[in-house]
Length: 317
Image (cartoon, rainbow, N blue to C red; front, side, top):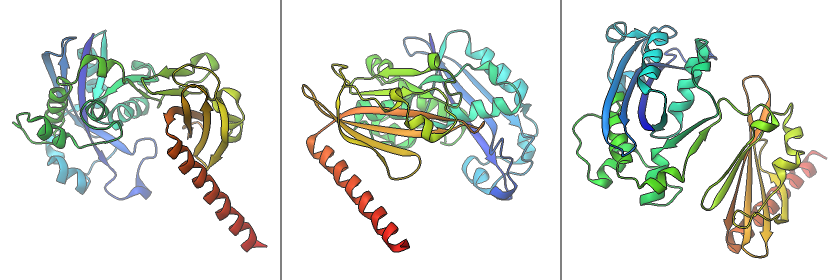
């Protein structure tokens, strides 16, 4: 298996959100990629400037960041041919690697716009090198810039940042420093193409937490009444954990709960409800071990939300 470390640059509507194309808010204008073999040795590279079709003027932020103009972009390949060339170059056995979570999603959204989404089967499993850097070198929750990671590791800075091929090269250099067990034990999932049916649902058990991605539901309420969505198991022994705090939300998208395993302690559950482009809903649930102090903090958070809602109801009376 090869690692395809890629970076995208994209343009957006230069006239504001009101005039953007809702189906394509970010139009890819450059693809840069480095191919590493299974030993993480660099074996090839790919670079392509893409001729824009949707946004024919460069947004000022895009111009500031990557320094291209429309004359240069007009010399590029059209997206349909460029992405076919890129995916053909990737080969038959590969894993995508990116810095952060956005590039995999935007690649799929651009593919869908041109009717080419079938070229990539989803949900897409990939390696977020930004997360891998945090897991190996700092704390799991830190999210640093690519330049920070390059400086932290003392890697050679031979080119500018915010250019697709250079950023792919720097990301590949960081990936080469990550231990294999860290890479393979921390795979990420992009759910732009979310599970549709029960048999497509995703369960992944990491070292210290569990992730579950549900099938589609017609409403958010239907999702939150599903037993699989709301169940909680210990991430270590896999036994049912007794609920200490029922699921509660501080908004319409995020829900929290606390459960207890007699053997391994407290667990925090978090459910994020996501809406699809077809107006369906699915849930992404994570369950992880926490301390008693964290459990008490969540309990206090629930109490504060209840008091706030009670005050609002009282004010309306």
